[in-house]
Amino acid sequence: MLAWMLNIAGLLAILTVVMFYVGGRIALASKPPATPTVTATKPSFNVIATMPTQEPPRVVPSITPDPLATPLPNTAPTPFFLASGRRGTTIGLSVLGRPIEVYTFGQGDRQLLMVAGIHGGYEWNTITLADEMIIYLDAHPEMIPDDVTLYIIRDINPDGAARSHTDEGRVNENRVDLNRNFPTNWKAEWNRDGCWNDTYTTSGTTPGSESETKTVMRFFASHHISAAISYHSAALGIFPGGTPWDADSKRLAKTIAEVASYPYPPVETGCIYTGTLADYAVSMGAAAVDMELSNHHDTDFEMNLNVLNAFLNWR
Image (cartoon, rainbow, N blue to C red):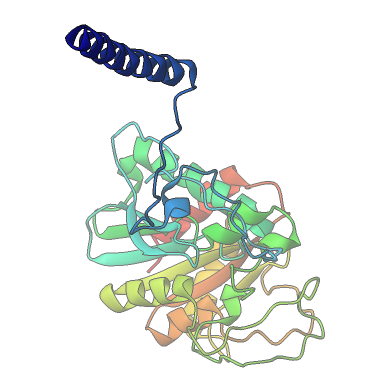
C-alpha cells in the first residue's frame, strides 16, 4: 500500500511540473513582443551637413552699371568678307577689348595712313566711309600706285561706336575724347569756348593714357608714315596738323580742297585744339589733316574717291 501511495504522489508531482511549464509557455505566447532597447551612439560627422538639402540663394551685391558701358558681344575678326579674301590685322584693343584693325593695300615704300571713327558712334559715318573705301580698293587694287602702301584704320574707337550713334558714343569707355589724348600739345583741361561740349569729356589722366591712343602711337613708331588723314564729321572743313599749321600739312589740305567741297581754310569757332591725332602725326614726321565730312550721316563716297586718288598721288 505504501509503495502504491508513493507512486501516486510522484505521478502527481510530475504532472504539476508539466502543467506549470505548459502554463508558462501559454502566458508568454499571449504577451506582445518586447521592444528591443537600442543605445544611440553619437556619429563622428555632422549629420546635418551631409543631408541633401536645397542650396540657399546666394546674396550678390548690387552693382551700379556705368551708364556708358555696353556688354561686350562676340566680335568677328573682320567686319566683312572681301572678295579677295583680304582680312584686317588687329593692331590693338579698345578699353573693353574690342579689336582695332588696319587694312593694308599696296607694297610701296611711301606709306600713307587713313584713320576713321576716332569719335566712335557719334561720327559713325566716318567708319562707314572707311569700310566703303576698303571694299572699293579690294575690288580695284590698280588704284594704288606702285610706290605706295596705304593703311586704313577703320575704327579707332570701337567701344564708342558700339555704345551709341548719339553724342554719348563720342568718347571711349573711360569718357576720354581720343582726339585730345595724344601727347603733342596735350592739356589736362582746355578752354571749352567754341569747342564741342555737349556732354562731359576729358583728355585722359595723362598724355596717351588710353589703349586706343597707344595703339595708334605704336603704329606710327613701327612705320614710316609720310602723310595721314583723320576723318571726322561734320562740316567744319579741312584742318592741317601742327601748331602753327605745318607747311606740308597745309599743302596736303589745299590738294584735297581742289577735289572736294570741304572748306579750306576751315571754319573757325574759336576752339583751341589740344592733343589731336593730326598734331601728333606731324610730330612723327608726317603731313596730316583732320577732315570733316558734310554731315553726321552721309559718307560723301564719290567725292572721297577723288580725295583718295589725290591723297595716293600727293607728294
